[in-house]
Image (cartoon, rainbow, N blue to C red):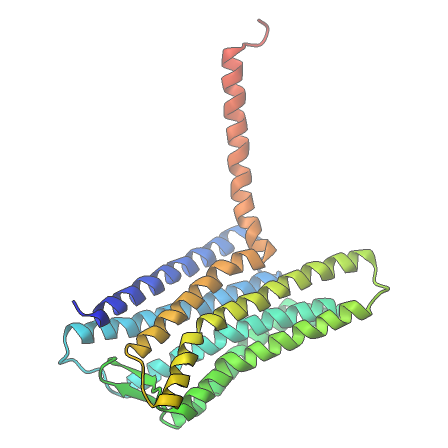
Length: 306
């Protein structure tokens, strides 16, 4: 068994775990959160989980092609569908990062523009989610129009070749750089606003602190996810300097993305208080049962009236 087959198998396992995790969380949210139709933060969390689910699904398909190709080298998956599939994968990556932008914008509206209630409404963010997807499709459109998604025979998939510096830089700027810059800018603006606003009512201060804490976690999460993608950047730099593509470069890229998506899915539980409440409810249901069992045991040992 060669290394490429092992790496493909690892990729399939990681994306399968994340796929199941996202499905589980979405189902739990729909079953446990009763104010789903009016809670914007839960809507945005579901949006991020849905994007993560799509990323895992499309990457599972691509890794399945890679595994089949490595097991039977006579197979070729070249064709227009290969390019469209990779285009959709990049659109999902882009939408995932812009879903974090929406979470940051929501915190901005709650803290800075709290008097404009319409900006915090459920309907506005439903429209924002649609705009997020339109932007994601448009951002990656130049790559497919410029034929950047090329079939790589040894990978049995279409990717932007590491030799295509222009195509890679376009994808990196749209998928990683722009969302990260927007979120960081929003975070700094909120920090400045809270420091300037000294005459805020106590309940507004508490609400702002909570939203700022959540946004800070979002920023940290994005930096972690982007940081896990640093191997891809390192591979690009190595190629620019030495004109040499690192062995298994595309597997390194795919696996680093899988770790980033998995960490994002886990971290969302700790970012959104309403999602944490789901697990607290489960614990609360277990504890009364345990208390009743202890009481019954004590009663049997020391009957009342003796």
